Image (tube, rainbow, N blue to C red; front, side, top):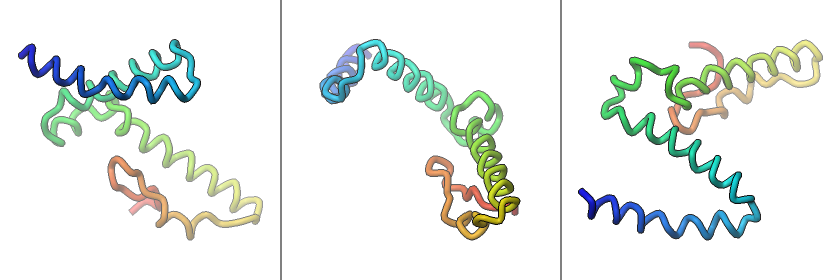
Length: 107
């Protein structure tokens, strides 16, 4: 109830001075806070991973994974075409932190 909301509010208070010391404007801090809240609210509404998988495009990390993978694939093609370096050997090192999935070649 109200006590748990108050405790969550008190728990988050020390974060504010940390952001303030970075020299980031209040407006930027407010926008970042709203963005992070929207992200966490999206994941907080789902209790099980099965629920998350139903509507992936609505959740940031599930939406951004294929986007970032596509970008890496395009970069790899560019480097391969230019014969400068092949990123293929680095694929196994690239892992999405949130999903613990490799950004490497398609399985």
